[in-house]
Length: 396
Image (cartoon, rainbow, N blue to C red; front, side, top):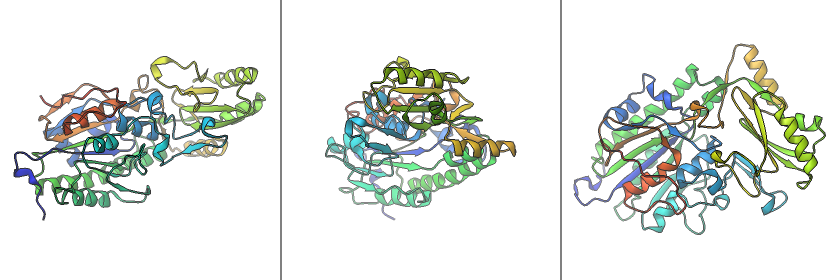
């Protein structure tokens, strides 16, 4: 076993950040998760972690990495069009960092002389404006097990000092898939959490055996929470019935409407009226969205944005029919993307253990934009260039 330089009082700090997809803040209170229980008992936990709007995977992960809200970093949904980049320019669960308008943590670290390693994170597969992580895994593969990620993280820590990364970030599957398919209160979610916790236990054991804790901080966060949903709505159908020609992106809590003729004010008005008619939905011109959402972009939101409140959700016709059939058989489904201030269930987790972290610390609600400056503070560097968050005090 290669030992870290933990016995060296001058060892430089290392930070490991894991994102567990779709882990709601109160999942931490479930029993049978010994590794997470250890981190909370001996480290720090925030009451909850408030994601950006929309509380979805790609916007959330970019906010976590940049410390910037969506209107600054530009990843407005998991999928969207950007006519400013071309008539068919589409971001569709994309891997290219050129879409991101704010500096990610790994680029900020590398700019300041700190080597970084990333095992899957939105925007990490390509360089951001000429700078990227020294070590990175690509392309993204949802089938890669967490066991392999743990093995790779430990292997990175075992590199010679001159090659070892001091910032390591990794995406884990968390409980997102189970929450979507079976609902947040299902036994499937708990089974997913137990599987993730077992691999976290392996990582903790690896850090223990390397005597790494004197210079290593482990942070676990999530991109969003989950809530039961039950009322699918097809925005495309509503617009067709209103005689509005448009492309539509359904995103559970959102529908982004790109009119065939963006200058057609009458079509925009009819779209807003049609999408506002169902209970639980509000529609806005894309340049007149509520300011507290921090949801704006000159070219990526289309002309109309419809926002739902749970249990309402936007789904295409076929998926909506399938979900109605599932519920008729006693099943349940989950969703996210809703306003995280209005819907508490959208909140994720923040747990920390190791260097710079007190024992049994309980923090008030933190924001996703606070992660990047917190990591930067632990590393002793400046936060990413466009960060708007504040470093959390993890000590008693």
